[in-house]
Length: 315
Image (cartoon, rainbow, N blue to C red; front, side):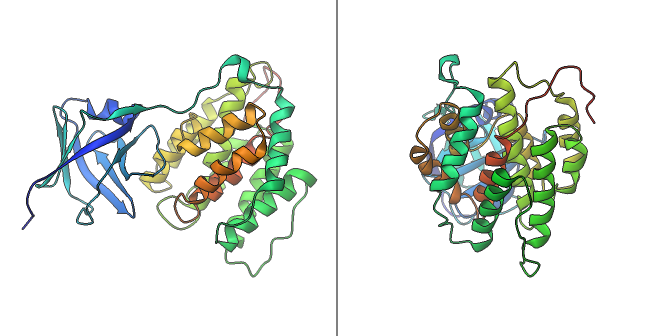
Protein backbone atom coordinates (compact mmCIF):
# COMPACT_ATOMS: atom_id res chain seq x y z
CA UNK A 1 0.00 0.00 0.00
CA UNK A 2 1.29 3.46 -0.91
CA UNK A 3 1.89 6.03 1.83
CA UNK A 4 0.22 9.40 2.38
CA UNK A 5 0.02 11.95 -0.41
CA UNK A 6 3.16 14.10 -0.69
CA UNK A 7 3.38 17.45 -2.47
CA UNK A 8 6.73 18.77 -3.73
CA UNK A 9 7.50 22.03 -5.52
CA UNK A 10 9.68 22.05 -8.61
CA UNK A 11 12.53 24.56 -8.60
CA UNK A 12 13.87 24.87 -12.17
CA UNK A 13 13.15 23.24 -15.49
CA UNK A 14 14.75 23.15 -18.92
CA UNK A 15 12.80 24.42 -21.91
CA UNK A 16 12.12 20.98 -23.41
CA UNK A 17 10.89 19.65 -20.06
CA UNK A 18 8.69 22.73 -19.65
CA UNK A 19 7.16 22.21 -23.09
CA UNK A 20 6.53 18.51 -22.45
CA UNK A 21 4.83 19.23 -19.13
CA UNK A 22 2.61 21.75 -20.88
CA UNK A 23 1.49 19.15 -23.43
CA UNK A 24 -2.18 18.27 -22.80
CA UNK A 25 -2.54 14.76 -21.42
CA UNK A 26 1.21 14.12 -21.21
CA UNK A 27 1.65 10.76 -19.45
CA UNK A 28 3.82 7.67 -19.38
CA UNK A 29 5.95 5.60 -17.04
CA UNK A 30 9.09 5.77 -14.94
CA UNK A 31 11.84 4.36 -17.14
CA UNK A 32 14.70 4.19 -14.63
CA UNK A 33 15.70 5.42 -11.19
CA UNK A 34 19.30 6.07 -10.24
CA UNK A 35 20.96 7.92 -7.39
CA UNK A 36 19.70 11.47 -7.61
CA UNK A 37 17.85 11.13 -10.92
CA UNK A 38 14.58 9.61 -12.17
CA UNK A 39 13.89 9.19 -15.90
CA UNK A 40 10.33 9.49 -17.23
CA UNK A 41 9.31 8.21 -20.66
CA UNK A 42 6.13 9.62 -22.14
CA UNK A 43 3.66 7.59 -24.15
CA UNK A 44 4.57 9.89 -27.06
CA UNK A 45 8.19 8.65 -26.91
CA UNK A 46 9.59 11.85 -25.38
CA UNK A 47 11.79 11.71 -22.30
CA UNK A 48 12.53 13.98 -19.36
CA UNK A 49 14.12 13.50 -15.97
CA UNK A 50 13.98 14.75 -12.40
CA UNK A 51 17.17 15.59 -10.49
CA UNK A 52 17.74 16.57 -6.89
CA UNK A 53 19.19 19.95 -5.94
CA UNK A 54 22.74 20.28 -7.20
CA UNK A 55 22.36 17.95 -10.18
CA UNK A 56 23.44 19.13 -13.62
CA UNK A 57 20.60 20.78 -15.48
CA UNK A 58 19.65 20.02 -19.09
CA UNK A 59 16.89 21.09 -21.41
CA UNK A 60 14.96 17.89 -20.52
CA UNK A 61 15.62 18.19 -16.80
CA UNK A 62 13.54 19.33 -13.83
CA UNK A 63 15.25 20.24 -10.56
CA UNK A 64 13.36 19.17 -7.42
CA UNK A 65 14.10 19.25 -3.71
CA UNK A 66 12.95 15.69 -3.07
CA UNK A 67 13.13 12.35 -4.89
CA UNK A 68 11.74 9.48 -2.82
CA UNK A 69 13.63 6.17 -2.89
CA UNK A 70 10.31 4.41 -3.38
CA UNK A 71 10.06 5.37 -7.07
CA UNK A 72 10.44 2.37 -9.36
CA UNK A 73 10.51 1.43 -13.03
CA UNK A 74 7.04 1.03 -14.52
CA UNK A 75 5.20 3.48 -12.24
CA UNK A 76 2.69 5.57 -14.13
CA UNK A 77 2.85 9.35 -14.28
CA UNK A 78 0.35 11.92 -15.49
CA UNK A 79 0.40 15.69 -15.92
CA UNK A 80 -2.82 17.59 -15.27
CA UNK A 81 -2.89 21.38 -15.24
CA UNK A 82 0.37 22.30 -13.47
CA UNK A 83 0.70 19.08 -11.47
CA UNK A 84 2.88 16.02 -12.21
CA UNK A 85 1.64 12.94 -10.38
CA UNK A 86 3.84 9.83 -10.13
CA UNK A 87 2.18 6.73 -8.75
CA UNK A 88 -0.64 7.29 -6.32
CA UNK A 89 0.95 9.48 -3.68
CA UNK A 90 3.57 11.82 -5.14
CA UNK A 91 2.64 15.14 -6.75
CA UNK A 92 5.06 17.74 -8.08
CA UNK A 93 3.79 21.31 -8.42
CA UNK A 94 5.15 22.81 -11.64
CA UNK A 95 3.95 26.39 -11.09
CA UNK A 96 6.91 27.69 -9.01
CA UNK A 97 9.56 26.36 -11.43
CA UNK A 98 11.74 28.91 -13.17
CA UNK A 99 13.17 28.22 -16.62
CA UNK A 100 16.82 27.20 -16.91
CA UNK A 101 18.69 28.24 -20.04
CA UNK A 102 22.27 27.36 -20.98
CA UNK A 103 24.77 30.21 -21.39
CA UNK A 104 24.68 31.74 -24.83
CA UNK A 105 27.40 33.13 -27.07
CA UNK A 106 27.07 36.59 -28.59
CA UNK A 107 28.90 37.38 -31.84
CA UNK A 108 31.36 39.57 -29.94
CA UNK A 109 32.18 36.63 -27.63
CA UNK A 110 33.55 34.48 -30.42
CA UNK A 111 37.32 34.57 -30.66
CA UNK A 112 39.51 33.29 -33.51
CA UNK A 113 39.01 29.63 -34.30
CA UNK A 114 42.60 28.69 -33.46
CA UNK A 115 42.39 30.39 -30.06
CA UNK A 116 39.71 27.92 -28.96
CA UNK A 117 42.02 25.05 -29.83
CA UNK A 118 44.85 26.73 -27.93
CA UNK A 119 42.50 26.95 -24.96
CA UNK A 120 41.93 23.19 -25.12
CA UNK A 121 45.67 22.56 -25.09
CA UNK A 122 46.10 24.82 -22.06
CA UNK A 123 43.16 23.17 -20.33
CA UNK A 124 44.67 19.73 -20.88
CA UNK A 125 47.82 20.95 -19.16
CA UNK A 126 45.97 22.05 -16.04
CA UNK A 127 43.45 19.22 -15.74
CA UNK A 128 44.05 17.37 -12.52
CA UNK A 129 43.41 13.68 -13.06
CA UNK A 130 41.36 13.27 -9.93
CA UNK A 131 38.27 11.46 -11.16
CA UNK A 132 39.02 8.57 -8.84
CA UNK A 133 38.55 6.33 -11.86
CA UNK A 134 41.82 5.09 -13.33
CA UNK A 135 40.32 4.28 -16.71
CA UNK A 136 38.75 7.74 -17.08
CA UNK A 137 42.04 9.43 -16.22
CA UNK A 138 43.82 7.22 -18.74
CA UNK A 139 41.35 8.10 -21.49
CA UNK A 140 41.82 11.86 -21.02
CA UNK A 141 45.59 11.34 -21.03
CA UNK A 142 45.46 9.31 -24.26
CA UNK A 143 43.18 11.81 -25.99
CA UNK A 144 45.58 14.58 -24.95
CA UNK A 145 48.47 12.65 -26.51
CA UNK A 146 46.51 12.04 -29.72
CA UNK A 147 45.60 15.73 -30.05
CA UNK A 148 49.20 16.82 -29.53
CA UNK A 149 51.05 14.14 -31.49
CA UNK A 150 48.41 13.02 -34.05
CA UNK A 151 49.56 9.46 -33.40
CA UNK A 152 48.30 6.64 -31.21
CA UNK A 153 49.31 6.52 -27.56
CA UNK A 154 50.02 3.19 -25.92
CA UNK A 155 46.83 1.35 -24.95
CA UNK A 156 47.72 -1.51 -22.60
CA UNK A 157 46.22 -4.78 -23.77
CA UNK A 158 45.55 -5.83 -20.19
CA UNK A 159 43.33 -2.80 -19.57
CA UNK A 160 39.71 -3.73 -18.90
CA UNK A 161 38.73 -0.70 -20.98
CA UNK A 162 40.89 -1.66 -23.96
CA UNK A 163 37.87 -2.69 -26.04
CA UNK A 164 36.44 0.79 -25.45
CA UNK A 165 39.63 2.79 -25.92
CA UNK A 166 40.56 1.28 -29.27
CA UNK A 167 37.40 2.25 -31.25
CA UNK A 168 37.37 5.67 -29.55
CA UNK A 169 40.95 6.38 -30.56
CA UNK A 170 40.36 5.03 -34.07
CA UNK A 171 37.40 7.36 -34.55
CA UNK A 172 39.23 10.30 -32.96
CA UNK A 173 42.17 9.86 -35.33
CA UNK A 174 39.81 9.75 -38.33
CA UNK A 175 38.06 12.91 -37.12
CA UNK A 176 41.31 14.77 -36.51
CA UNK A 177 42.71 13.88 -39.94
CA UNK A 178 39.61 13.95 -42.19
CA UNK A 179 37.00 15.95 -40.32
CA UNK A 180 33.45 14.80 -41.03
CA UNK A 181 34.34 12.92 -44.22
CA UNK A 182 33.43 9.24 -43.66
CA UNK A 183 32.73 10.04 -40.00
CA UNK A 184 29.00 9.14 -39.78
CA UNK A 185 29.60 5.60 -41.08
CA UNK A 186 32.73 5.04 -38.96
CA UNK A 187 30.92 6.29 -35.84
CA UNK A 188 28.53 3.34 -35.94
CA UNK A 189 31.30 1.20 -34.44
CA UNK A 190 30.98 3.18 -31.19
CA UNK A 191 27.21 3.31 -30.70
CA UNK A 192 26.06 1.22 -27.73
CA UNK A 193 29.60 0.09 -26.84
CA UNK A 194 30.24 -0.07 -23.12
CA UNK A 195 28.24 -0.89 -19.99
CA UNK A 196 25.44 1.09 -18.38
CA UNK A 197 22.40 3.10 -19.42
CA UNK A 198 24.70 5.55 -21.23
CA UNK A 199 27.56 3.46 -22.65
CA UNK A 200 30.98 5.12 -22.53
CA UNK A 201 31.40 5.26 -26.30
CA UNK A 202 28.02 6.98 -26.67
CA UNK A 203 29.17 9.58 -24.15
CA UNK A 204 32.41 10.20 -26.05
CA UNK A 205 30.62 10.40 -29.41
CA UNK A 206 28.04 12.80 -27.96
CA UNK A 207 30.70 15.13 -26.54
CA UNK A 208 32.52 15.19 -29.86
CA UNK A 209 29.38 15.94 -31.89
CA UNK A 210 28.38 18.61 -29.35
CA UNK A 211 31.67 20.40 -30.07
CA UNK A 212 31.26 19.95 -33.83
CA UNK A 213 27.79 21.49 -33.66
CA UNK A 214 28.98 24.61 -31.84
CA UNK A 215 32.04 25.04 -34.05
CA UNK A 216 29.84 25.03 -37.15
CA UNK A 217 27.37 27.40 -35.52
CA UNK A 218 30.04 29.88 -34.40
CA UNK A 219 32.40 29.77 -37.37
CA UNK A 220 30.12 29.96 -40.39
CA UNK A 221 32.82 30.41 -43.00
CA UNK A 222 34.91 27.41 -41.98
CA UNK A 223 32.54 24.44 -41.83
CA UNK A 224 30.15 23.23 -44.52
CA UNK A 225 29.68 19.56 -43.68
CA UNK A 226 26.26 18.10 -44.34
CA UNK A 227 24.31 17.44 -41.15
CA UNK A 228 21.88 14.92 -42.66
CA UNK A 229 24.25 11.91 -42.39
CA UNK A 230 24.61 12.70 -38.67
CA UNK A 231 20.82 12.80 -38.28
CA UNK A 232 20.66 9.46 -40.11
CA UNK A 233 23.23 8.10 -37.65
CA UNK A 234 21.03 9.20 -34.75
CA UNK A 235 17.98 7.49 -36.27
CA UNK A 236 20.01 4.29 -36.63
CA UNK A 237 21.37 4.62 -33.07
CA UNK A 238 17.85 4.54 -31.58
CA UNK A 239 17.78 0.78 -32.19
CA UNK A 240 21.37 0.10 -31.11
CA UNK A 241 21.65 1.57 -27.61
CA UNK A 242 19.58 2.25 -24.49
CA UNK A 243 16.72 4.78 -24.94
CA UNK A 244 18.23 7.10 -22.31
CA UNK A 245 21.56 7.11 -24.11
CA UNK A 246 19.92 7.56 -27.51
CA UNK A 247 18.00 10.61 -26.27
CA UNK A 248 21.06 12.22 -24.67
CA UNK A 249 23.20 11.46 -27.74
CA UNK A 250 20.66 12.95 -30.14
CA UNK A 251 20.39 16.09 -28.02
CA UNK A 252 24.17 16.48 -27.90
CA UNK A 253 24.24 16.28 -31.70
CA UNK A 254 21.84 19.24 -31.78
CA UNK A 255 23.97 21.22 -29.31
CA UNK A 256 21.99 20.43 -26.15
CA UNK A 257 23.90 18.95 -23.22
CA UNK A 258 24.37 19.15 -19.45
CA UNK A 259 25.00 22.65 -18.15
CA UNK A 260 28.71 22.19 -17.42
CA UNK A 261 29.36 21.05 -20.99
CA UNK A 262 27.69 24.23 -22.25
CA UNK A 263 29.67 26.36 -19.82
CA UNK A 264 32.96 24.76 -20.85
CA UNK A 265 32.50 25.17 -24.62
CA UNK A 266 31.49 28.81 -24.04
CA UNK A 267 34.63 29.43 -21.97
CA UNK A 268 36.81 27.84 -24.65
CA UNK A 269 35.28 29.82 -27.52
CA UNK A 270 35.48 33.02 -25.46
CA UNK A 271 39.20 32.34 -24.89
CA UNK A 272 38.83 32.46 -21.12
CA UNK A 273 41.60 31.45 -18.75
CA UNK A 274 41.69 27.62 -18.69
CA UNK A 275 41.85 27.68 -14.90
CA UNK A 276 38.27 28.97 -14.96
CA UNK A 277 37.26 25.93 -16.98
CA UNK A 278 38.35 23.60 -14.21
CA UNK A 279 35.08 24.16 -12.34
CA UNK A 280 33.28 22.77 -15.40
CA UNK A 281 35.71 19.84 -15.60
CA UNK A 282 35.19 19.02 -11.93
CA UNK A 283 31.42 19.23 -12.32
CA UNK A 284 31.45 16.94 -15.37
CA UNK A 285 33.60 14.48 -13.44
CA UNK A 286 30.71 14.02 -11.01
CA UNK A 287 28.22 13.20 -13.78
CA UNK A 288 27.50 9.49 -13.55
CA UNK A 289 30.25 6.97 -12.94
CA UNK A 290 32.28 7.83 -16.04
CA UNK A 291 29.72 9.67 -18.22
CA UNK A 292 31.10 13.16 -17.64
CA UNK A 293 34.71 12.12 -18.27
CA UNK A 294 33.90 10.46 -21.58
CA UNK A 295 31.80 13.45 -22.67
CA UNK A 296 34.70 15.71 -21.72
CA UNK A 297 37.15 13.61 -23.75
CA UNK A 298 34.79 13.80 -26.72
CA UNK A 299 34.35 17.58 -26.39
CA UNK A 300 38.09 18.23 -26.21
CA UNK A 301 38.67 16.04 -29.27
CA UNK A 302 35.75 17.63 -31.10
CA UNK A 303 37.21 21.13 -30.76
CA UNK A 304 39.91 20.13 -33.27
CA UNK A 305 37.57 19.62 -36.22
CA UNK A 306 39.45 20.65 -39.36
CA UNK A 307 37.82 23.30 -41.58
CA UNK A 308 36.31 22.06 -44.83
CA UNK A 309 35.14 23.48 -48.13
CA UNK A 310 31.61 23.71 -49.59
CA UNK A 311 30.28 21.23 -52.13
CA UNK A 312 32.35 18.29 -50.99
CA UNK A 313 31.00 14.73 -51.10
CA UNK A 314 29.99 13.38 -47.68
CA UNK A 315 29.77 9.72 -46.84
